[in-house]
Image 1 (cartoon, rainbow, N blue to C red):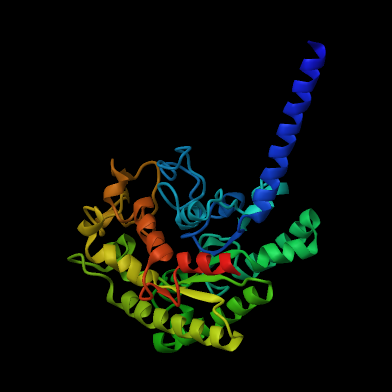
Image 2 (image 1 turned 135 degrees about the vertical axis):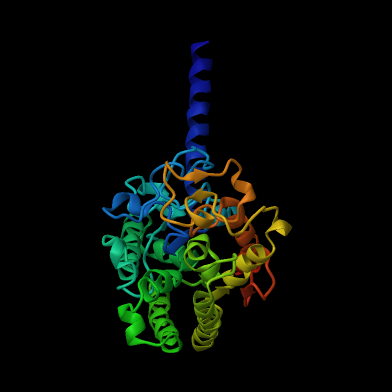
Length: 368
C-alpha cells in the first residue's frame, strides 16, 4: 500500500511538472502583443501616475469581468483586450503594473497612456503622462527584462514575431490644436500645414518602433473626431458633427495611409498596416440602428447636452444598458462599439485594413 502511494505521488508530481513545462512552452510559443498610444488603448498605466487623465473610479469597468474600474476608458473591454482574445492570449498588463514580471512578460505589455499624442506638447494639461518617447524607452527597457528571462536571441525572436498596435493622433487635435481658441499650435500652423507636420513626426515614431524590432504594426487613424458626444455638446445645435474636427480627420487619415504605404515601400515589406478606424467608427455613427445601438450621439455616462460635458463620474447620468450606446463616455466607444471596430480589424476588407486584415496577417505568419 505504501509503495503504491509513493508511486501515485511520483506520477502526480511528474504530471504537475509536465503541465508547468507545457504552460511555459505555450506562453513562449504564443504571439506576444505590444500596445502603444492613448486612452483608446490604455489598460491602466495612468493609475500609477499623478494625473487627472485616469479611469480608476466607478462607473468605469462596470461591465468588465470584475465589475470594477481598471484604468481602461471603457465600461468593459477595450480594443487591445478584444485583440488579445482573438490571439488566444490573456490581456496585456500595463507596463507600470507590478504584476508584469516573470512569465507574464511573455504575453507582451501595454505602454499606452491616456492623454498623449504624437507631439510632446499634446495633453500638457494632464501633466504626468507617459509621452511617446518614454513609451518607446519603456519598450527598450522591457526587452532588457525579457532578455534576462529567456536570453537575448529568444527575446529578439519574441519581439520580431509580436503583434504591435499603435493608436495616436486624436489628442493632437482635441487636446492640442483645438484645445483652446488661438492655441499655440493653431497660431503656428494652418490646419493644412499642421497635419503634414504631425505625419512627419509620426514617421519618426514608426521608424523608431521598427528599429526596436517591431515587424507587424497595426496603425490606427483617428475616428470621426467631430462626432463624439463631447464635441456635439460644445459645437452642435441639431446633432450635426463639428465641421472643423471632421475636416481635420479627413486630412489626417489619408495622409497617414500614404505614410504607411511609403514606409512599407522603403522597407520592402508590409511592416505597417493601416486600420481605417475613421470608417469603422463612421459606420455606427451614421447608422447606429444597423449595429443594435439606439444612439451614437448621446454618451451612456456623462452630463449636459448629449451627456458630453465633463467626465464620467459616480455622479454622472448612467444608462442602464451599455450595449445600446455607441459611446460609453464623452470621448470613448462602449465595449460593444469596440467589438464592432475589432471585428473589422480582424476580418475587414482592404477599405478598412490596408494592405491586409489581422486574419490574413496571422495566416501568413503561421506559414513563415
